[in-house]
Amino acid sequence: TTLGASAAARDGRFFGTAVAASRLSDTAYTTILDREFNAVTPENEMKIDATEPNQNQFTYTNAERIVTHARGLGMQVRGHTLAWHSQQPGWMQSLSGTALRNAMLNHVTQVATHFRGQVTWWDVVNEAFSDNGDGSRRDSNLQRTGNDWIEAAFRAARTADPDAKLCYNDYNTDNWSSAKTQAVYRMVQDFKSRGVPIDCVGLQSHFTGGSSYPSNYRTTLSSFAALGVDVHITELDITNAPTAAYTNVTNDCLAVARCKGITVWGIRDSDSWRSGESPLLFTSSGGKKAAYTSVLTALNNG
Ligand code: G3I
Image (cartoon, rainbow, N blue to C red):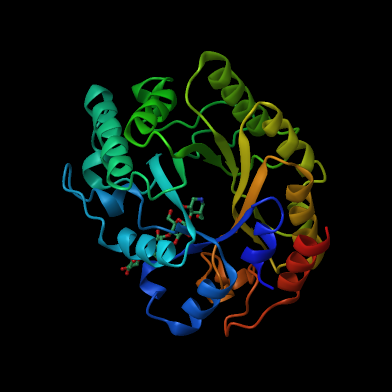
């Protein structure tokens, strides 16, 4: 069997991968993609700089290549990402205040409307919390438009694509006892209590080795789920792909009913944003690594 089929057999979970449009002409790549996965996340092609390189001029060619490829094979698509402090085109970086707030909301509305009905989950807002250990918001031009920028983005996304699941996505939110995890938890709790539309939380899960996978990861997943949102592991990669850590992450997701799936951040090690660390499930030549077998075994038996 395959990662996607085995995940689907576990209460309809997904097993996805980040996909780069530039690699869709590489048949070694698409052979694995088409065989193994039932969900995709465009790695860069739906980001703000890619979709709105000039203000109010939207370009969807590369994003659509991925969406068309995936949907043609029945795979679900995760839209990544509508609002983010990073990968902003120059025109957006130079805006502030009301002009930036309106530009951000227009971007959310335009992109979510364009792909309405084709995207299962949107990463509406990405990486809005700081790593400084006090649970504060990350300083950014978006944050300086007012603390309510995140909920404004979620409301705009809901209006534009009412049937999509709307997610908040971040990294270093794996350890339940970290201030950043707690801060994201409190935001989601607040959104749920006030009726701000949010359906899911993405834990990126870029682990720098087996030791950086926290033993309370399952508690983090189940705690978010208890707020009434789905949880997704959205960008999984682990330095040197240790089999134990990959097994544990998979079993943790399977143990939480609202952990609806896992996405790895690339297919082969050579496709990874940190290819020097061999963090993925396939070798650079497309062979299945030991971690692949660990994940598949956990999906089938865990
Ligand atoms: O495509 C251009 C190429 O034409 C140019 O010659 C080259 C020179 O720098 O750049 C290429 O674009 C690069 C792009 O990846 C495609 O390879 C960008 O510079 C580079 O910044 C970009 O990096 C991406 C990064 O996000 C940008 O923030 C990575 O591929 C992507 O894996 C990474 O993904 C992020 C998630 O979106 C959010 N979570 C963290 C994760 C890892 O950083």
